Length: 320
Image 1 (cartoon, rainbow, N blue to C red):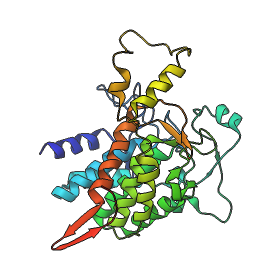
Image 2 (image 1 turned 180 degrees about the horizontal axis):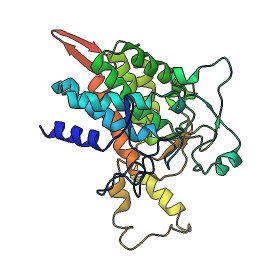
Image 3 (image 1 turned 90 degrees about the vertical axis):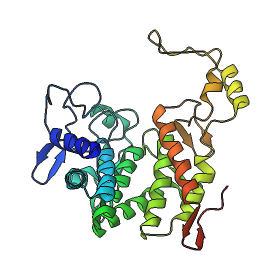
Image 4 (image 1 turned 30 degrees about the vertical axis):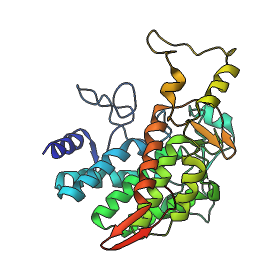
């Protein structure tokens, strides 16, 4: 099957270390973990989570794990299971988890970290953060990994990994204002919630509930009502006011063909804002990833609102 061939190809280019596999951060050109047709130009293993421009090495492995685990559940493919398992073990290594964000921005700059990533401080002596799924940088990247690990754990019935994901999810709720569904995705750095994380949080809470690992429907309700719906830019009049107020701003530099002024507001309706605070949207700008991930959250919430089992219906969310 084509999916098996794809999994086999992803497995073939992975770098193996004992019982785990990974894609090297500086293996090619452009984005980290990009594989050149001529082969990897470097195969060094990342020493910490915050290597790479996204401030997350595990995040680059999330989607292969997620897709392979789902395909194994659907087809029983051993190739997919091998790929998902080896990369899941890579992402679960203790050096990628735990730690506290360092408020000293000078230290982050010294380490060459982006403006959205803080340097790492060690956990308090009494906290085993690496065993509990604690994180301190770029929550969206971490959340994609948690979703992937959960799918892998569901595929093989691994209770330890399920518990790791559950504890990490509950820790994440403490990094913001849970009753508002708001998470600080970049502690001690941007201190804002990324649009991408909205879809992640909704999906993760629903799948944890589906797996019997907790009752997180109130969390889903808080995220969906206060952040997911409000973070989508659908008010053309408000966007027009923003455009008028920004008329004197110097536009960024673009290369030919990169920018368009053709019906920008009309064509932008429905996209997700890039960053938000508990009180509102910081700036009316967006990243393509935020729209792709945020709209996932809309589907997950809609699909999970009512579940049917024979002649019984269970209402999880009071939304329409």
